[in-house]
Length: 431
Length: 130
Image 1: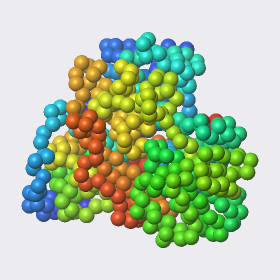
Image 2: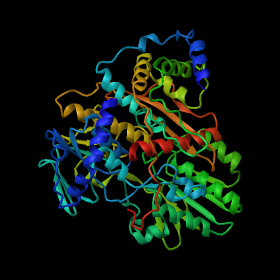
Image 3: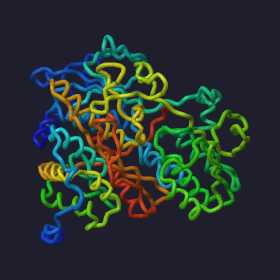
Image 4: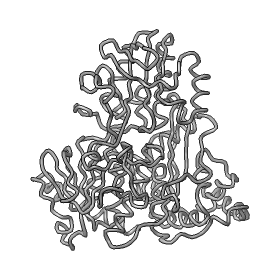
């Protein structure tokens, strides 16, 4: 294994220039091994999406295949912006620029070819991905597009203009910055309203962490302000006991939590949302829309017929509906939390399986991986939920092993651990 | 720190049996594959192949690449039994079989310590989000 890592790094740094040129050209994908004067690659994996799942899959396929599988990532964004820690931008203890990174080191260290483009279609019969500026064929395809927002019931929010007024900020970036600015401009005594969709959605504890972060900011700067939470779920769906206690102890009287409150319409002009029962007017309104598997997964017909997520074989993450196409990250119908750590764990099981399958061998019949998810309740204190998950051969799903659970209480120590988690997962997926 | 680790190994080497664990501690086939993905799952906190990054933050996670095999194994067992208190490691250690603990200890002990860094933070570019 050590030799593998050395081999990869040395050879790929040497050829990085050549690869860069070939990718920037008219999508003429020079196979690495030819550029390196070695035998040709055993195949090409195309990865759609450069988030936590896509970057992990790309890197670990390169590492574990010892560079013998060509990997091409397609990602529209020039930068990686971390969703984990992005709620702290709303609280004011982090800047968006602390969470924004480039892909250069990842590409260079692992000889990953990169195309900054948007996928427009997937033809799984021809094993081909179409983009705005070209097309590419694959032997195996990994689809890791994250989530797509469903605006069927909230068509008013579909435009970029409406989202300037009412950002979701559920993909970290300019919407996160916008929501922070709106909170800064809100008068003392204003009302912040956040709406939470029916689970499953990206990052189960995320909305409740966000409420803590907004409360933390308002308590210090606008203490007369209130937070109204309209949760489509029947109760807080993650770390319930911990969040309930933090809201009562740290942010007493600030948070009005209303369960079973799915929103049915939004008035963008007046920032008013309606549920089946009531109308609520906000000074700052954050609607987190319902979610489904990302657009490229829809294009490739990977969604289950009655459920907007992708069913996969958990030994390889190959789609149950389309051969040679794998799905990892938030788009998977796994029944497990849609977290960044989970996305990377799934991606590496998928990567390991693909490396084996492409060499005519079988994947691990019983994969096991871990998930650790921290939530910050203010600028310093965090709390975890952590579990090991193992494959259940009878049920053919990943189930949680014994021993998992949540922190007894948030702490400064776990806040420091949570930052270390972020530093290392960023290093793992981006270098 | 070194003295501490040595002491720790000496003291903890007498703590061995774990009641009620034997039945689930069987060996999977394809052990190498099993361990590489399981080990990679530790990267979120301990870095790629156990090479945790060094930063200017108040706390850095432990780099486990190249540590002594017996030390890693015993440390995980002590997290599991509660002999060593933990904030989160007991959750992971308890979810593993004894065989997985042994395999992970072996895997990380064989990793060459390398200097891994965080990617450089950047200003967010002025492009439209989705």
